[in-house]
Length: 238
Ligand code: IPE
Ligand code: IPE
Ligand code: MG
Image (cartoon, rainbow, N blue to C red; front, top):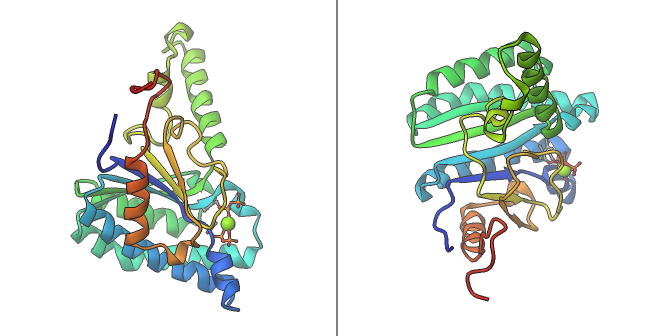
């Protein structure tokens, strides 16, 4: 089965630190450049006509980084949410944030809630930001919610199915990614969307995230279009 423009592209934006190191700059510069690359890429996604994009912005494991780097990233996020909201909204972007919000600063939580509310009716491009996100934690939380329903008697254990379980994930209204792109040459998932990536095509790009452009996105889509998505069935042409 040949495929056109992917409905949903997920991106692991990796290599900000190495981008900065190669230029003898502090890591914070790499994160800043990374945020600029994201802004440009969103414009490209709209031009190409991709309906859903998810970006891995901060993982649950990233909380183990030095506090100074966490502060830099959170400061950037705060400024980004403030400065980009109007542009996002005008461009028809619907923003959704997934992850463990309880670990974020109160003012950032409010900015996120405000941005989600303001953009909720937009339909050009849904941008999902994975923030303080961990795939295992998401699955455990879903399992706990299902268990609580069984315990309270509102659900019978025999009714638990993939469809029911998915409704407990952060991504309950978001289709699974068709394509996963990871930059910086690393070839691993790093606890990203463990459930949702079950049948996604993966494209690994050598460039660091701040250097990733529309051209690279189009190249990844071309690569995706060459793939034969079989979902476990026999090949069409033996
Ligand atoms: C990705 O770049 C951004 C975050 C994880 C927040 P890195 O900060 O991981 O950069 P490298 O991988 O160290 O180069
Ligand atoms: C994954 O990148 C998380 C984000 C891009 C936000 P990391 O740089 O944290 O992952 P590892 O440590 O290389 O697996
Ligand atoms: Mg990294």
